[in-house]
Length: 467
Image 1: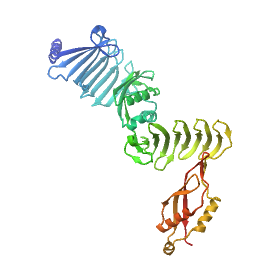
Image 2: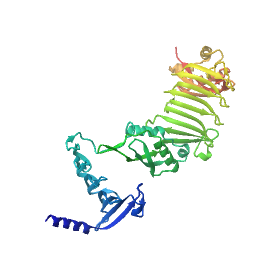
Image 3: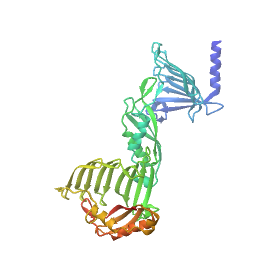
Image 4: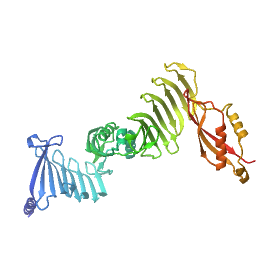
C-alpha cells in the first residue's frame, strides 16, 4: 500500500506540473546559456491549469539540490505551500509552510546532525510560539530567526546620518530636480558595505549622491540568520525633496518670477528634522555664491552655526560661528586678496580676544568690528536734543494719549539721515511729531563696519509721557 500511495502521488505531480524551464546562473548570479558555464541552475515547473503557480527547484552544478520553493504567483514572488532548503552536503536545513506569501504554520530549521534547531509556529506572518534547541536537542534561549543588519544607533541614527550628510546640489534645487533613489547593497559579515546598486533611479546627479552617501557610511551591525552572522542584501530608499524655497530678485532688489529675469536669487532650505532650522544661500547670477546663513529659528532671525560670506570675486569676506543667536567661536574677516583682516574670539557674544591685520598680513592696532553712528555729543546729548525739541501734540495732551513711538532711519556715509520709518506706532499725531524731531536732527558721525564707513540703519524710541 505504501508503494502504491507513493506511485499515485508522483503521478499526480507529473500530471499537474508538466511544463518546465531550466535556467543557468554563474557564480555572480547572472544568467548564462549552458550548464557548462553555470555554477548553479534552477528548474521551474509550471502548473498545467494555472501558469502563475510555479515550483522552483534550485541545484548546484553537481546536481545537488539546494532549495524547493512553491509560488502561487512567481512574478510577484508570492510563496504558497511548502518551502524546503538543503545545505551543501544535501542535508535538510529548513522546512517552512507559507500561505498567500506569509509564513503560516510550522517553521523548522535543522542542525547539520539532523536535529531540530528551531520550531516556530506562525499565523500569517506573525510568530505565535517558538522554541530553539541545542545541537544535542535540548531547549535553549529563544532568538529570532532573522535579525536584520543595523546602522550604528538604529533607524533613527540612520535617518539622521542621511539628512546630515546628503548634499542636495543647488543646481538640482533651482531646477526642481527631486525624487526617490532606491538602492540595494550588501552588508558583509565583517560589517562593511559592498555591491551598491541603484534599483530605482531618480536623476543621474541624485543617484550619484545617494551612492556617495552610502559608500561613506560607517560599519553596520551584520545580519544574523538563525543565530549565525551572514551577508545580507539591504534595500534603502533615499528621498531628495528638502523643503526649499527659491526667491529671485532683479538688480534693484525687487522680486521677480523666474531665474532668467533675476540678478540674484536666494535658496531657503528647511531642515527636515526641525522645520524652524533653515539654511539660506544667496547667489549672484550665474551661480556665484555670496553667502550661507544658518538659522535655528528663521522667523526670529536667530543665527546658529557657521555663517560664511564671499566677495564677488569668489574670495571669502567673512566667517562667523553662532550659537542660538550669539557669537560663539571665531569671527574672521578677510581682505579681498584673501589675507585675514581680523580674527576675533567670542563666547556668548562677549569678545575674549581679537587681532587686526593690514592687507599684507601685518598686525595693526585693534579696532572694533562695528562702530555705531553717533549723535553729536553722544547718547546723553541725543536725549537732551529730543527732550528740548519735543512738542506734545495738543490733541494727544487733551485726550491723555501717551506712549513710545519706535522709528528706524538710515544714516548714510556722510552722517545724513534718510528713510525714516515708524515701526512702532502710538497715534498719528505722536508719530508725526517723532518724525519731525528726527528730521530736525543735525548731521551724525557715520558708522564703521570693519574699518569702512558705511550706511547704517538706526532704531530709536521716542517716549511721549504726560506729567
